[in-house]
Length: 263
Image (cartoon, rainbow, N blue to C red):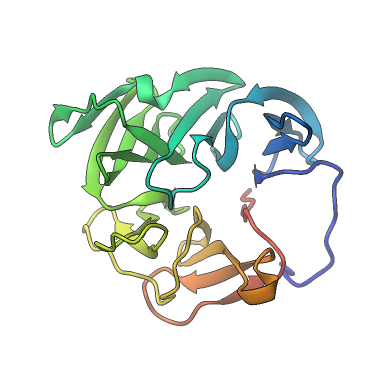
């Protein structure tokens, strides 16, 4: 209600965070001679209630609206999606229990099984039926938007050139970043797929956005963007209309990993 208002600062430090009305998830890093990582589950006041070790550098974190499903993505090798060679580990947990690395699930692309050893998955977003989710899949330099089924432990490719999907609150659209045929690593535009019509407008922000966007409402997207020049270590949260109209503008200064809490 007041994006420019005062902030509460908590003791826990997160590389990535997400929250719902009753819980949250925080992907943590413990500094030291050997840096270690973990995933902490948070209570309704964002207090840590449990934690587990996690393999790799924190990249993405998402929860289902009821908080029962949690997805984390980490870089096992490489530190960026912009690098030519990287490997990820994406795990979905139900009530704290791992459902396994998505690389072990059944994967179908163009009606055929995807068995390539270089397959990677990242950026989960959940529907509210306790079964359906969307995720990025990649192999051989191609990325796909895939629809997943928790019950069947199966992933099915829907279209190419889509990364870090985010499902709209009304479940009719999926936003993601696209390379648009640009082979330069780390250059993306935000696109929004209408699941019924198949239309896919780009947003008006022509800058490269390397984030898993969040929906403020059914018509507006949020995402973190680093500043340029001497302030490059500082990130702001931006907003832009999802239909390609309007202009992008800062929503919250000095923020990242936006999570919109819905009742």
